[in-house]
Length: 88
Ligand SMILES: [Zn+2]
Ligand SMILES: [Zn+2]
Image (tube, rainbow, N blue to C red; front, side, top):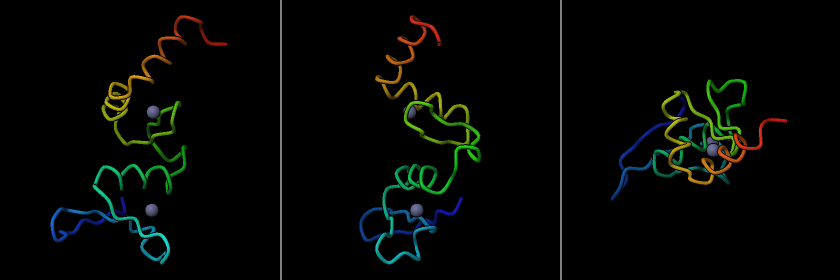
Protein backbone atom coordinates (compact mmCIF):
# COMPACT_ATOMS: atom_id res chain seq x y z
CA UNK A 1 0.00 0.00 0.00
CA UNK A 2 1.45 3.35 -1.02
CA UNK A 3 0.75 5.36 2.03
CA UNK A 4 3.56 7.02 3.90
CA UNK A 5 3.54 8.29 7.42
CA UNK A 6 5.37 11.22 8.89
CA UNK A 7 5.24 13.13 12.08
CA UNK A 8 3.58 16.50 11.81
CA UNK A 9 4.00 19.36 14.20
CA UNK A 10 1.21 18.28 16.46
CA UNK A 11 -0.34 15.11 15.28
CA UNK A 12 0.69 12.31 13.05
CA UNK A 13 -0.50 12.75 9.52
CA UNK A 14 -0.52 10.38 6.63
CA UNK A 15 -0.26 11.07 2.99
CA UNK A 16 -1.47 9.27 -0.07
CA UNK A 17 1.54 8.77 -2.31
CA UNK A 18 -0.59 8.27 -5.36
CA UNK A 19 -1.87 11.80 -4.98
CA UNK A 20 1.54 13.15 -4.09
CA UNK A 21 2.36 14.34 -7.59
CA UNK A 22 -0.91 16.07 -8.05
CA UNK A 23 -0.33 19.63 -7.01
CA UNK A 24 -3.98 20.39 -6.58
CA UNK A 25 -4.90 17.43 -4.50
CA UNK A 26 -2.45 16.22 -1.92
CA UNK A 27 -4.21 14.03 0.52
CA UNK A 28 -2.93 14.38 4.06
CA UNK A 29 -5.16 13.09 6.76
CA UNK A 30 -5.49 10.76 9.67
CA UNK A 31 -4.34 7.25 8.89
CA UNK A 32 -7.70 5.57 8.55
CA UNK A 33 -8.96 8.32 6.28
CA UNK A 34 -6.00 8.05 3.94
CA UNK A 35 -6.39 4.31 4.05
CA UNK A 36 -10.02 4.53 3.07
CA UNK A 37 -9.22 7.14 0.46
CA UNK A 38 -6.52 4.96 -1.03
CA UNK A 39 -8.73 1.94 -1.27
CA UNK A 40 -11.59 3.88 -2.71
CA UNK A 41 -9.69 6.05 -5.18
CA UNK A 42 -6.84 3.87 -6.33
CA UNK A 43 -8.07 0.36 -6.06
CA UNK A 44 -10.67 -1.21 -8.26
CA UNK A 45 -13.25 -3.53 -6.83
CA UNK A 46 -11.72 -6.60 -8.42
CA UNK A 47 -8.38 -5.80 -6.78
CA UNK A 48 -9.84 -5.54 -3.33
CA UNK A 49 -10.12 -8.85 -1.51
CA UNK A 50 -13.19 -7.62 0.35
CA UNK A 51 -15.57 -4.78 -0.21
CA UNK A 52 -18.84 -3.48 1.07
CA UNK A 53 -21.65 -3.75 -1.47
CA UNK A 54 -23.50 -0.92 0.17
CA UNK A 55 -20.94 1.88 0.15
CA UNK A 56 -18.03 0.34 -1.78
CA UNK A 57 -15.74 0.51 1.19
CA UNK A 58 -12.73 -1.68 0.41
CA UNK A 59 -10.46 -3.58 2.72
CA UNK A 60 -7.91 -6.36 2.87
CA UNK A 61 -9.26 -8.40 5.71
CA UNK A 62 -12.50 -10.12 6.43
CA UNK A 63 -12.40 -8.78 10.01
CA UNK A 64 -12.18 -5.25 8.71
CA UNK A 65 -15.30 -5.74 6.66
CA UNK A 66 -17.09 -7.20 9.66
CA UNK A 67 -15.94 -4.25 11.72
CA UNK A 68 -17.13 -1.89 9.02
CA UNK A 69 -20.58 -3.48 9.00
CA UNK A 70 -20.90 -3.47 12.75
CA UNK A 71 -19.87 0.18 12.99
CA UNK A 72 -22.49 1.30 10.49
CA UNK A 73 -25.94 0.82 11.90
CA UNK A 74 -27.52 1.77 8.61
CA UNK A 75 -25.79 -1.12 6.93
CA UNK A 76 -27.15 -3.52 9.49
CA UNK A 77 -30.66 -2.24 8.92
CA UNK A 78 -30.33 -2.61 5.17
CA UNK A 79 -29.01 -6.11 5.54
CA UNK A 80 -31.80 -7.06 7.89
CA UNK A 81 -34.35 -5.73 5.44
CA UNK A 82 -32.81 -7.75 2.65
CA UNK A 83 -32.97 -10.86 4.74
CA UNK A 84 -36.65 -10.33 5.40
CA UNK A 85 -37.66 -9.50 1.85
CA UNK A 86 -35.30 -11.99 0.25
CA UNK A 87 -33.00 -11.54 -2.70
CA UNK A 88 -34.56 -10.92 -6.11
ZN1 LIG B 1 -4.82 9.27 -3.32
ZN1 LIG C 1 -20.22 0.00 3.77
